[in-house]
Structure formats: structure tokens, C-alpha cells
Length: 229
Image: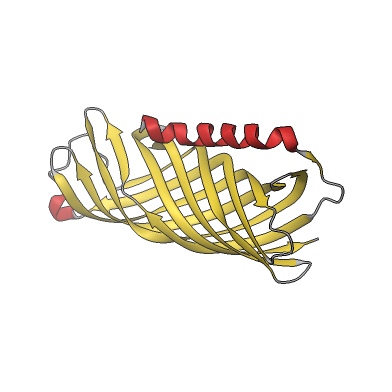
């Protein structure tokens, strides 16, 4: 877990140090709005509630969102963009595992609304209509989890483990992006993007009672469209 938490600051610092010495203000900033959506690959979420721990099993889900951004600087290797993004993610929960009882069938859903500030580098490819890019983002995620363990198995859960659960929490989230954009016209770009997102530490609570700590990891394949304004 410690190594994963270091990925974002290390890559972000390296990107800034590589670009800042050559950056110059763009003469004609491009402003844009856009929408995106796609398929989210969900791993199991780890959870802990002393003295217990385990995994929350997830099905894959969907992500949709909207964005607005602007070009902010030119560099020798490309152009920098700043972007604000709001997104919604949803997936089903299929199981709960504990360190003592193992995997138990469960039904529920996991929802998250994220507000992110993203930075992108569009690589200079001359007159090519296909523009590769990389990016990173930092923001807040509001996560809501609701599920219940099959009544046949609920009796063997740890005594202090809540069932059913309807909890939520807000915390910092970060993400890394890479992909390519196709220039359909001077005003329109179609993009395909791969994304890795993480909520490093989240407290799920309801009615002022903390249920457990969890971590959320996901990867997504997104299709988006931008319109210059």
C-alpha cells in the first residue's frame, strides 16, 4: 500500500521538473468543454475494522462525467492543459470476505462522485491529427456503499461487523491518465483514454458511527469528446 501511495507524487514531480524549464505562455489559449464515459475495471476493496479485516468483492462498473479546460502553456515537447472534471461511478458488490470467515456472498452497490483538477501534456506531433497525451489529477471523492450479506451467512460475521451497511465517506482521490485524441475538426476532438484511480484511505460511516476503513482502486477505459469554445 505504501508503494502505491508514492506513485502519484513521484510521477507528478518528475513531470513538472521536466516541463517547467521550457514552458512559455500560450499566445492563444484554447478553451473547451466535453463529456466522457466508459467501462471501469474494479478490483476488490480492502477494509479494516480492528481487530478484523478483509475484502469487498466488486463487479466491474461504469463511469460517466463532464469536463471543462483550457490550454495554459506551450513547451518544447507539447502543450499543457488544465482541466476541471466531475464524474460518477457505479458498480455492484458481490461478496464480503473477513480474515476469520473467508468469502461470503453479498448484494449491494458502490457509488462515487468525484471532483478533480487535472493537468495534461499533449505531445507535439506536428500536423498529425492524432495527438497522444498523459495526465494526472487530484481531487475529492464522495463514496457511498450499501450492501447486505446473505442472511444464511450473516450469523457468522464478526459480532461488531455491520450488516446491512449503508454508509458513506469523503476523502482525497488521485488519478493517472494516458491516451490519444483525434482531431475531427478545428473545434472537435474525439479521445480514447486509459485511467488508473485510487482513493487511498476512506472512512465509511453512517449516523456518526464509523463502520470501517477501506481503500478503492480502479482502472477504466474511456471514450470522450471535446468541443472548443
